Each structure stands twice: as structure tokens, then as C-alpha cells.
Image 1: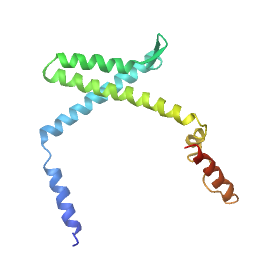
Image 2 (image 1 turned 90 degrees about the vertical axis):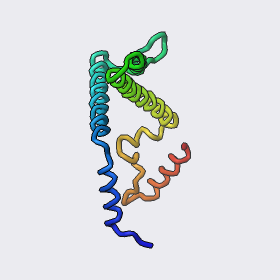
Image 3 (image 1 turned 135 degrees about the vertical axis):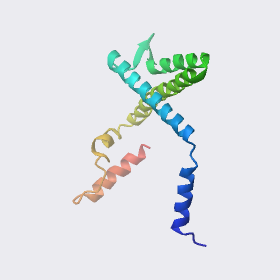
Image 4 (image 1 turned 30 degrees about the horizontal axis):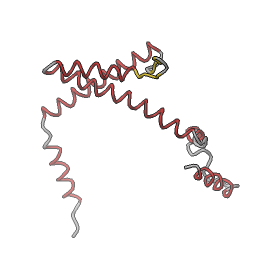
Length: 147
């Protein structure tokens, strides 16, 4: 049973037509709030020289603290302002989580020491070369042992 391409085109066209204009406008407003939050976090990072500060020997993400404050304030307010603050809280939390997990994963990759080259040359020199295919493949096998 084969379905024609026009069938899939009609389904896609129909699904775009079912988007409610008010929801589309709300999504646009939410994107603006998230972008403004990102700009504010970027300004805060530039002004403070980074978003992670040591407090009693523990690295504290300032955008994570901002997320908590914005979320708490958003829960206390009602209406559009409360919604915007809760959305800004989610955007700030995403920023903090992204940076925190990036550091976590980078630390995990650097334990074995084989992945630093991956960011510099794309594949860390493991691509087969014209003259030394076997040697490059051996290096790939050696790197795979550490996974």
C-alpha cells in the first residue's frame, strides 16, 4: 500500500493551518522573554567576569540563583507579569544547567586524555590518511579502549 507525496503534503499543510493565532502570539512573547533573560544573563556574566563564583569553597552558579529568585517572584505574582517571571526563571535555569553539565561532561572526557584533540581537528587525527591508514586505525582502536 503506497501513499503518494501529495497525501503527506496535505497532512503537513493541514497541521500548520490548525495552529491557533493566540497560541502562536503567546509563543512569540515567550521567546522574547527568554531572549531578554539570555541578554540579561550575558550582561551579568560580562560585568562580573563569569557566572560561577566561589562561596565558602563551593562553585555557585549566579544564573542558578537568579533562576530561583525569578521563579519565587513569579509564583507570588499573578497574571502576565507572574507568567513572564516564571518563564525567565526557566530560561535562567537552562543557562545554569547547560554550563554546569558542560563542565561535568568535559571533566569526564578529560579523565582519559584522549578527547582533547577531538575539538581541535574534528576527529583527533583518527581519519585515515593516504599513506598511513593502518596507523590511524590503530590510534582509533587505542582511543576506543578508554571508552
